[in-house]
Length: 257
Length: 220
Image (cartoon, rainbow over all chains, first blue to last red; front, side, top):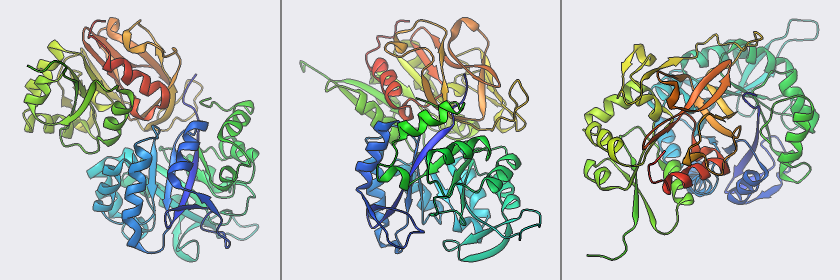
């Protein structure tokens, strides 16, 4: 008996539709975000992450309405990320019904924003999203760096040190995405997941690269993640949340079934 | 006089932010004879049939806001006379004291204190446990209570907190959970019921708990 590990389906939303993911060249339409969220809720998802990847900020209003619609019908935790740059952005999303907000690029350019947000809204609702890439060559000690702009721009920041700094500033949770793995379906980068999970005292969500259910198991058993996030394996009916949970439970992981 | 009036559930808004999900979940659990009102008006709280005290954020700000808005007498009066439920930081605010924010005196409805899990929290086998305690954990019911009706002992509810309640009177503990050690997650005395978890984020069992509250007559 104890705390269950979480499965979090992620909705990458572009112009009001769920799409396959940022890294994919051929973006496939996976449906209406509200309908998709309701389906995952019924299937037993432990949380839902809504990632607004709309390039322009024009459609932020659409996002607010969608978050409201999801929160009115889905009674599990909802995290909203993408384009969160100010306390006003956070306030709007929380008022629309989000339980947590994901801060990504804004934290890199202005780390104090994380402190300000945590002090104002509480650490429990501040998730810092970290996009990491391996920068060490083969044979060298492992080293991962923070990248921005969808993994294109290096920042020179060490990923593990960065995660610790974000927690010190007030992050209540870390959403870690491996930019090497995102979209590959080759599984999580277990090295960076474990390094960060062991370095911080807050929960870590592993993201990027899930192609099958065994990858979810490894994220917890080897990556030491507290939660696992996946998108495309659930969107197109390859696997249901329930199947994923049963597989993880069969592997000895405590789950909410 | 009107013939049929709606039963009112007042959700106390003391300026600590988002009550959207609490209100939506209560509406979802309610029938057509129940109205959910989010309010910071002591008169509305006083006139309500049932009162729910949510809690978000840090305890010092919670207690300070309750006091600044003159809500403490209305909360105490409601706890003395009608079905009353507190959730999350709400349960901590009903204790005597919390060690959060360097120590804060609370409303002292329940004997006991809120303590920090610590940033070096460990399981009995030495495994590191993350703080906040975030996610779905099992609640063992330690008391028969109308609010547990239709919910199995051991059902999972959604938690997110770094401080936990230690009850001064074990007879008032209605539910426990284990995270490194057993701790109290539900307290009940007379017409007051308080929980550490978030029913509004706990899917079917959370909605059932709200439904039970909406129909509760306040008798244990």
